[in-house]
Image 1 (cartoon, rainbow, N blue to C red):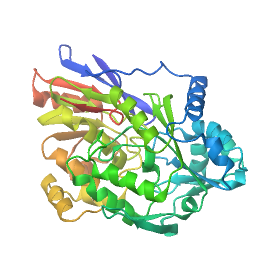
Image 2 (tube, rainbow, N blue to C red):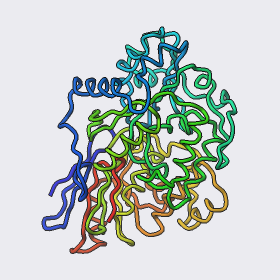
Image 3 (tube, rainbow, N blue to C red):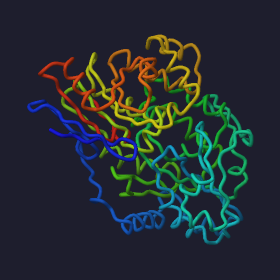
Length: 423
């Protein structure tokens, strides 16, 4: 059997032995209810769906009505590490903001704790037409964050001034699983997207709670803190999209930041929460290519999403190019200085450090299963992370199957950033 898994902007192939017990899973092919998107939605399909959502807002007035009463607007969009196709969303959204002139509109890139963009990246994210229209393009600058207050859980809210100063505040994003906030999208565009390091650290420190997991929002302290913060800060309107495996828009929701987001998350969950009959000895997983494997900081989410699908003592073959390396300095320091997984597990319980939280999540998996990594990392760096390096998927799978034996169960997850898989 030949398999192909995304890797960067391309794909890698492997040949699995005949007779091997293999299951390939992805969105819409789990054992639960399936919600299938249109097959390869066209550009016209995408635009029709975006406009439908804008014309049928959930729990909020139409955006054009809100714009008519505003003098300035801030539109928050995702950064380069996210798959959200803002350049295909913004033209229709800006039409709704037509009561405002372009110079009255700022597009803010929700960096959170990620690196700043180059000017070329900003243009690529919003599209050349939007970039030339006269709107302002601004990366988050944490030095320009202003105190707003403190949530009931103790998160010190410090938010990007250009967002706070806008009359109308709009958030654009995509909905998919997030390994401790439940789902991406909704108010996450602002918290952590437009917040200071202190605010992000305060919020993310709640990830150690047992209910801070992918697909869970009710009772999840991270998500509940985000939503409480959004009530304090203010979000007037959201436009969130659901993407297929080719990163095409097959569904959109718009309106109130809670009501619309929950509606979209419910649809996503019905399609992408995959239950398998039995945990696998070997899981072959890819984040789904760029941008989800742009660095290990992003690719880690796939490890978390498939962790429930591998047996204790099993192997996850992670196929993630990671051309930008680790993606975060503290994460790199913790990962390469791990020594053994339990060290990081104990450390994060003593001291929560942003960046270290992801390393501790990886350590939690490595404490019960092995990770074979196919990437651009040097072999010695991979070994310093308590993982095993391989130069090809074929080599990694052969080693994993030699260890697991002839009766091994194998699970293939080509788009691991988009699903949760568990037995």
